[in-house]
Length: 119
Image (tube, rainbow, N blue to C red; front, side, top):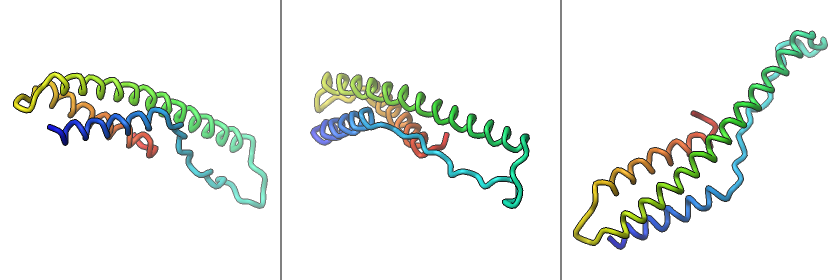
């Protein structure tokens, strides 16, 4: 049980660190233009490039908002897990504790994937 408590404390520290660190959305490197370098882009190509840039910016903003929401939920779940563990003793392990830990694990993987820039 001591190792579980130690693991939970480590998890809480990791969550606190993730919560406090600014998450910078990973931006894709600029795409090379679709037109030859010897001629200026057409108005249509410029508009297309502008739309793509705006879409990428919105996607990054959405991912940042989702990361904030998910890390807030992760912190809440970890706090609930700690409360459940505090109520148990070395002879009991609640099914709720296991479910909460699984939920935290799934959400943590999701957060990690989003931080890498994927969904």
